Image (cartoon, rainbow, N blue to C red; front, side, top):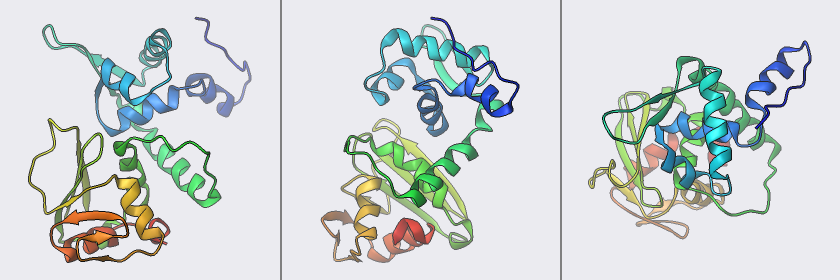
Length: 216
């Protein structure tokens, strides 16, 4: 497959030559959340053809944005290089920009772990000092969010997420924060239609760690 170029002496055009093709930024999105095997990427990117995914991964390796690691006979794992990780602030700025525009397409398809970058975009470390909270979102794939002393961390997938958490939310990250945006209060095991198990004040403290636009 021939890689297209704008052939312009412009840094924006040159950057788009590298990351502007369809699916490329979404592959980077997945790897910004966690290292992935080929099968993980296929599952997270429904609609991309096998040959096209292979071509995009080959291109991203060629320009130094991702690396491939194979241990023994295991399937290779893809991860962002240091240069690739430098794109994460750009992804977070795109999220904030799209939030301000308040434009959404009509599709309702989403995966739970996509909300992690949204949490990063609106995280307020100064509100999370001296906290140690583990919140599990029991949607597909399962996600554990850990806030500790102003730092945000996460685990993805049922095999990696521990059974125990301070609060278990029986919904996705999107559904939880959408309920709060709609004005629902966190109390009595419910946030609107979203159910949770665990201390109410712990979940309130968790929600407070994110920028007001996420909660308005």
